[in-house]
Amino acid sequence: MKKQFAVIGLGRFGGSIVKELNDLGMEVLAIDINEDKVNEFAPAATHAVMADTTDENALRSLGIRNFDHVIVAIGDNIQSSILTTLMLVEVGVPHITVKAQNDYHEKVLNKIGAHKVVHPERDMGIRIAHNLVSKNVLDYLELSDEYSIVELIAGDRVHNHSLMDLDLRAKYGCNIMAIKRGEDINVSPAADENLKKQDILIVIGADRDITRMEQDLF
Ligand code: ADP
Image 1 (spheres, rainbow, N blue to C red):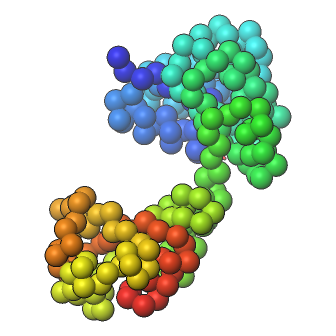
Image 2 (image 1 turned 90 degrees about the horizontal axis):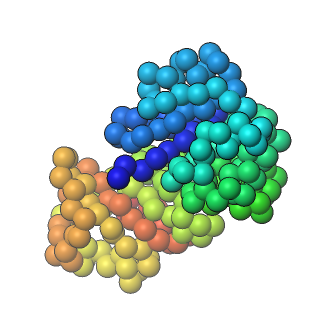
């Protein structure tokens, strides 16, 4: 059976989640307190309803507990976001993802039992900063305070060297998870794989090791 999603709050963030889930062929219920927003997203959602999700009866009458995953994308109104999340936790929704507006908001959401808290503006800021600092970093995903996954473009210094030659695991403690070359992607690169200029390497490691490797080789 298809997973059932509900998205509460149809601003830029919630709205783009609705559209993307719909494009991915998922069932998605779009909810907003504002009728114009509901009308705007009705064509992109399986159902779109107007409701104030801080009203417990309204939330229950949507049958919200039957959804596999609920995304709370209420933006500025932190109180509504917290109250909505609390009720979703109480009715036992199995996966609750909430957008946090700031660090305090994030702390409260974690405390009351949100399963995942996202901070899109902050996270995107971090990614963009990494792209700005190093022209060889295409993308950046923070796994924890210490570890990340980055996409690096291979340049002259690694051109025609094999992974064995470069010995990145021993020298930098970094692992190459995959190599993208044009349209091809190799998810289990062999040790004798020769890198080419313009290859995109997907690397996992500790931030300080990745930085060291980037400075030496990229
Ligand atoms: P973004 O920064 O992602 O654009 P916004 O703050 O613009 O976020 O959007 C949040 C949406 O959440 C708005 O469309 C707003 O109408 C909706 N919203 C706010 N409070 C509630 C609530 N209690 N119930 C349902 N939707 C709400």
